Length: 87
Image 1 (cartoon, one colour):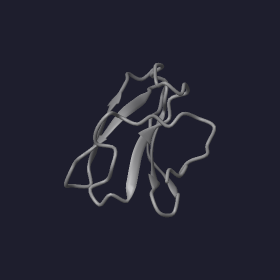
Image 2 (cartoon, helix red, strand yellow):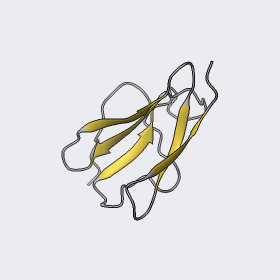
Image 3 (spheres, one colour):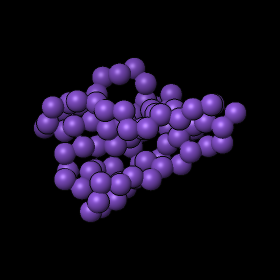
Image 4 (cartoon, one colour):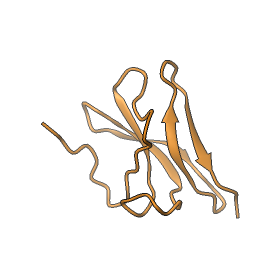
């Protein structure tokens, strides 16, 4: 049965592939403002724990830069994402 894990008012945008941590306990996402993810205006990468619902900040951009499209490594605790230019 589906269960909602996050409740914050911002978007929770999942990349098409590689959103699960290697141990399958965390889901990674970015926080763009629109639900469809069409605007690249997010400034944080977060993850939510599947069992507890705990949300952790993974990365926060600075100086007007935006980030998103987070993808996890399939075996190591590593991520990659796009970050736009500062200012």
